[in-house]
Image (cartoon, rainbow, N blue to C red; front, side, top):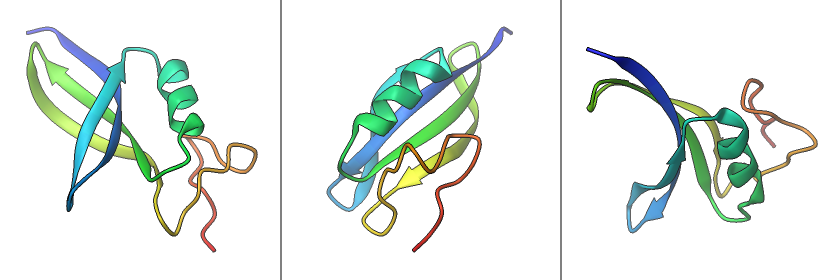
Length: 81
């Protein structure tokens, strides 16, 4: 099986989260993440062929955590408060 990863943008849909789009490159996904003004999550997905084997939230900007690109990056969580 071929193992690969992608970076996904998730947005709220009703009371749950739904994947909006994804990229193979973190740079593109990060740019889209920081462009959102509403709640959004940047998620790293690991796959074996077409099967998800792992998903991790890299960054989360919700109601209480605004997207602040000058203060946070995917590798460094946004400060709270």
